[in-house]
Image (cartoon, rainbow, N blue to C red):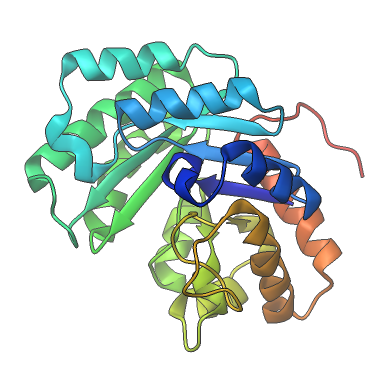
Length: 258
């Protein structure tokens, strides 16, 4: 199993990172993609990737932190992408729910990082909340010059998911699919398995039966199991298909065997 999106640096207080990684491994999670949201967390993400064999990094400026971005910050993010285990530019996008950064600034910084991804030929990890239409329209300008990408913690409808697929991207779902009456679960049930990857977004969005507690990468197994239940297939099939999609998305392997 793979946790395709988490923030280990945000859950340090609940246990040493080494313990979190070991706990994940003990629960069948062989790969963790740790996601940066600003310069500091991106630097930490790279440090974790260099420290732990199973951890890879994404680096980028989250829309909520866009107000703190400038040419110097973006240059440092770009420099981080030269590290061997950096596999994506992210978490980037738009957030009109929190509006922690002015929307015009969010859009500017988003486009700057999309241009970076085009130049570096790296996939992207997209955050969008209450901003799908604007996010989609901006991504559409760059999508076919970017190797691949994921709309993480996908907040949209089946129809919006199809628009994402038409760009050649995939969606990611997490613990929310285990919640009662979750729209995300309906979308996950309806769309093709090969278009979905799975995540924890730890320490947030803890899946049932641990909802209310701090999320961690080991708990992604409950997301895998619930997706299997939604699809009415064996978890082994989910694991094989989803993990292959993640590995292809982030170029973790070059060839695939059957």
